[in-house]
Length: 195
Image 1: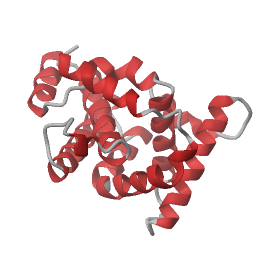
Image 2: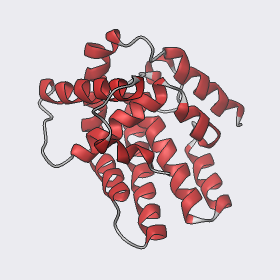
Image 3: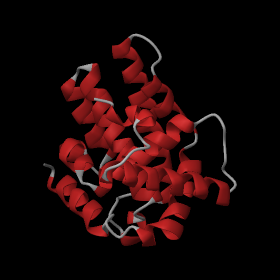
């Protein structure tokens, strides 16, 4: 489900998850100011990204989506076509969009040669995956939804978000070593084994 979007209402509170989400959101907002990418129309995206970052940190992203991630664009289309139903297609495109966003913005996998594409191609892919995910979500919901709107914004402004995330990684992630480099490599290795 789309648990991430419900955090808006629970983000302030006690407990490790809330503290961690608050840290992510706070770092993200600071990074937006520091990179000159402050906006007023996408608080929903900030909340989504905070949840996404957290899901990489606590490894729930991998548990939920690891099997859907592939580094090869052609395989994603094939996998989505094979599933057929809109909800599965949405999940495949959304999780690969999330993965590409994190890979380019936070983990800089490009520099380690872990993805078979250069930066421009990955940006194009990320945009496409999020656009498809947004469209599929609208189609099975039969209306525009909060989720489809967020995914549409991620598609339209993909480079802005990778820039903000990249700044955030450099400026704030030293405080948060729990977000281990190993985590994304683990997912990547699984993707290459085609699990």
